[in-house]
Image 1: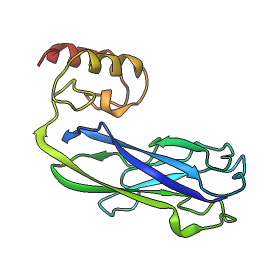
Image 2 (image 1 turned 180 degrees about the vertical axis):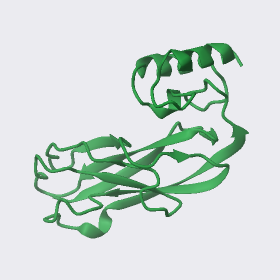
Image 3 (image 1 turned 90 degrees about the vertical axis):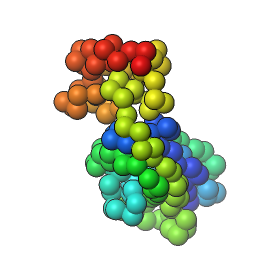
Length: 173
């Protein structure tokens, strides 16, 4: 087996200054045999070269068949808050070598360059598109009761009625 990162993305895609970011990576088994089951297939996200600053995902423990992919989204660790300007994020699969029998350890990273607008995020704008609308409402409601940071507008650690009130106050702006 040989784990590689096929792509990296920033969530939300149109991130604004001051908005919390999440990251995801599509990983693939580029090898000729399946990866082991029951072992964490983890990804670490490093923003602007700072180790682990974008968090990590260590929740995937299923086997990956040859050429099979899965998407891993930040589930823990550092929460990066966007600052205006140019940035890069690097996704590093198997960063702490939980899979020591991997056939090629030199191809486990992929980087993405991205820009953050100097416009400050609007309260209630969960997807960072600059408008508080039904899309943001859908994001909030589908994450209600969770810790999803892009919909936790008051930053109390939970998406709840207070966040819904913030969204409704700014709806249509």
